[in-house]
Length: 189
Image 1 (tube, one colour):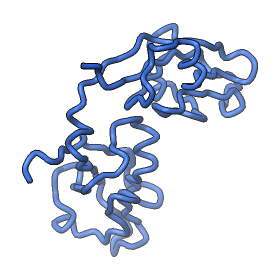
Image 2 (cartoon, rainbow, N blue to C red):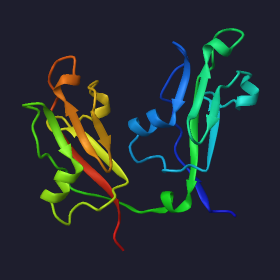
Image 3 (spheres, rainbow, N blue to C red):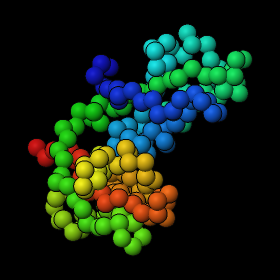
């Protein structure tokens, strides 16, 4: 049935150095909050240069909609996987939703144990402003609007329905930067 599904953007989170090329769904979801539907219908895999898995000739450990994609260097004759990218097809309603962004919220500072921008707290403090089930979350530094994923810091929670938590104990510097968040919700019609 044409139009019943749509494709996400391409993701390439890992390079084949180390143990292989790991484009796992859990890591991709963590690094790209809200960009992959809860139950993908299909996975498409190519090398970053566009070769199909079959043309690439690597032995593939996993390529499915549950785990994602794994190519292990140890499985290869030449001990090296090529660099792969993945994308997922999702039910059409996931991609067809018009997205509206909330205002930015900054309810906590990184003093104490860290910067806690919990979804439940933000929602209760801003009644009627954040939808019940956001599809996306964005987190940026309050001073320079640097995306959280570009700061090099580690995050304890970073999800549309959990919010954003940066714990000082998880940082090499011992201190989180100050972040603000906003949520992407389906637009009310």
